[in-house]
Image 1 (cartoon, rainbow, N blue to C red):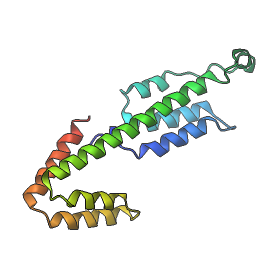
Image 2 (tube, rainbow, N blue to C red; image 1 turned 30 degrees about the horizontal axis):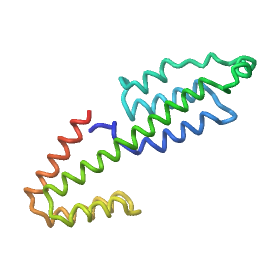
Image 3 (cartoon, rainbow, N blue to C red; image 1 turned 45 degrees about the horizontal axis):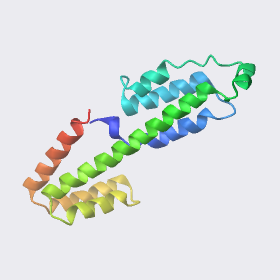
Image 4 (cartoon, rainbow, N blue to C red; image 1 turned 180 degrees about the vertical axis):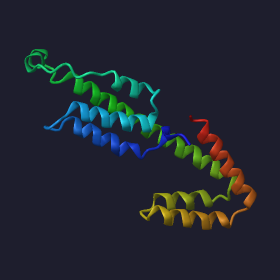
Length: 160
């Protein structure tokens, strides 16, 4: 499946953004860790990954920074890149949620998608969510469940 729309990377990117401004900032360690998150979230061929990969931290003179009056342009550029990545993941996650809901409504009884959505949004562990959703789907027409599942797989793989 495509990791491109996985919103679980959002907290990781927010953490990388926060670490960018830590007092004990280490460029090499930060860049390596952030590239790993970007690679997993978007892939090595993404513009985000490539942009950070080619970014170098050569703007180290405090006098240059003071003269420029803009603080640290490398960090500012990296912060903007991460903010864009976060917005992109949020948008893709929203689109995926809408598409998933549409597919479920197309093939399952009218109240089932709402029940599934309520379970997904609940604060129970993932295994409990899965069990509850399995119980709901077991009550549905098996052909409709298979049709929903195959439509979801096709929709998700088309995102790659």
